[in-house]
Amino acid sequence: MFTGIVEELGTVLSISQGGQSVKLRIAAQAVLEDLKVGDSIATNGVCLTVTKLVGSAFEADVMPETIRRSNLRHLKPNSHVNLERAMRLSDRLGGHLVTGHVDGVAQLTEKYREGNAEIFAFRFIKALSEEDLDRYLIEKGSVAVDGISLTIVACHEQGFSVSVIPHTKATTVLAHRRLGDEVNIEVDVLGKYVEKFINREPSSPKKGLDATRLRELGY
Image (cartoon, rainbow, N blue to C red; front, side):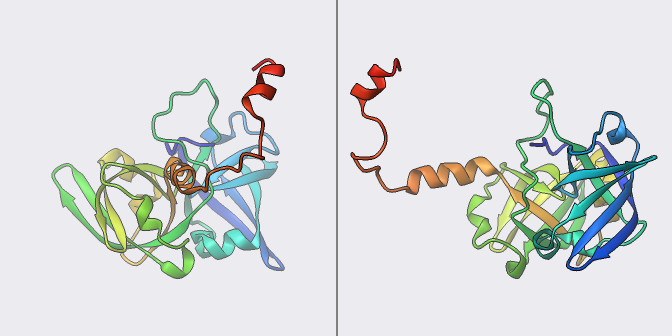
């Protein structure tokens, strides 16, 4: 689990192709401080497992499904990536709960200045996204864009817009994004759970434990 507060920009050192999978080697500094093999690290919002530590870099394997469904397939040597280590239970939750399981990919369609902020507008690429992600987006709700926790300022028919302060832009890959670029999107997972609970069919009386049995068990 992550918070969507990017810790630093990493740099892709190498990309090794192995059949349909890929091995990334990424240079970093801050996130290496207590990183261990087996730890999770969000890379452009994608939860990857650290498989090796090499000097001032780490390696991670990317499975075929992740390559197909995220913008990691566009990475090249010297590409910048957002990095965030998995959160501790004692950490401040500065953003929102982010799982690192990307729901889809969107394309940057517009960006413009508004006072001290910059507006970024995105449109979902339906072929690379789960169906009807729009229903999980609400104005002033949370969304993760390349792993960055952002607040939605407007919802569009096929996408949404966010407002970004200069600090966030300067310290994340948003500083390098151009019109037409693809970004990873993860909607607020709480909305998915709420939807499932509301829409699920009533449980059969024969399923689960009844009140009498629960009392017998001490509940």
